[in-house]
Length: 507
Image 1 (cartoon, rainbow, N blue to C red):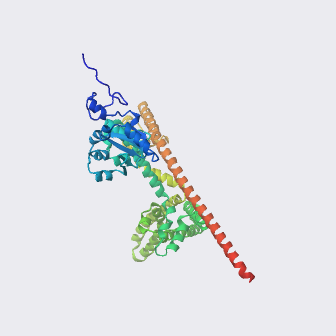
Image 2: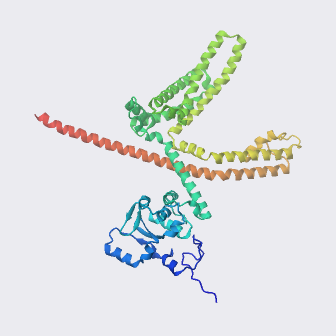
Image 3: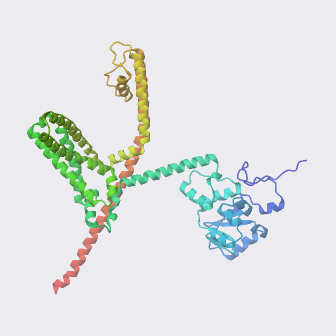
């Protein structure tokens, strides 16, 4: 009859032990083998234990087992790991601890060592070490979903255990969670960089005219610092709106007469002077000229003031041409110069982007576009594919119809673009049944296409806007509290000075 083998004690009946040995063991091996599932292996450690308790523990454990096991104390929790199980992974920290015979090298691997208890102490997280302990017992590294990825990676790197020992499914989910966490941290840093000027008041210390530049910087960049800074921020927004309204009114026919034109030119000159002075104050108060020139909002400020000075330059060149060129060439130059001046004046529309400096919503929108540029480019690619596809289909169906507007594929591009956007102006419509079926397919594709990225973009925009607003409110609240404390300090200082001055007056 076949002799019955003893069943392995384990957390799971199908768990594969890392040493790949048989289930049956000899009595000598059974003495040094302790299953992972036994709770006696993991004991709570306390520094207040008396000597008698430790002697009792020593008497409970056979002496022949002590030399086959490593007594590991991790953050107050005691673990017993077989030296043979730890030595199977000699690259790890505990594997080196089991292999080394030099006591000096062993002490370099741990934080402390108790000679009386023969325990190696490690000041690490005991909750994560349970997974390291299970790895040495079974050869498989378990990963739980509720653990912090960065903390878990830091712990396993300390113990020298590689992530490759985990199951493939768990490793894939863990890496996805780790990538998501790193992406969130990256976005958080970029969001904080959006409000970096509000946190850089200390970088003027030790520089030339540091106090003066810091005062100007607070007036221009930090509207929460004082009442004049708030007034300047409001004036900046008002001048932007006035400039846009003036540019709009300059195109009205009634304002193009001599009197109206003079008023519009005067208004433009006042706005240009204000924007120029604001730009120069930002340039003077900047702590780093390279960062100032690379900033997007500063580039918008420069574009806002350049059209005024370029217009003056071209007008002076126009006067010089009238003195040195012939009459025909003068007319050609004037016509070319007029077109250039129109384009330059049109650049003033970019002044509305200056509102992004004082608008959290515009900054959140720009940040959303930068973060979601891949989705936006993919959307534009799908729109272009739809325009080319449905315009070719519509031309092939409608080109034989008399009086049709779909005479070529480029002529059908406008219809396809309007239909994909679900606007449908109705200026170009199909006449045949097949053409209307193609139009229905184009409109349906446009509805599906436009509905996909809207939710993604809106959710990210609302998330970024909430974070920017919360960060802005925290900054303003801290500045208000600091001003209150400074006011109390000044009041107490004045009161103490008055109290000191009163006895002198009596004398």
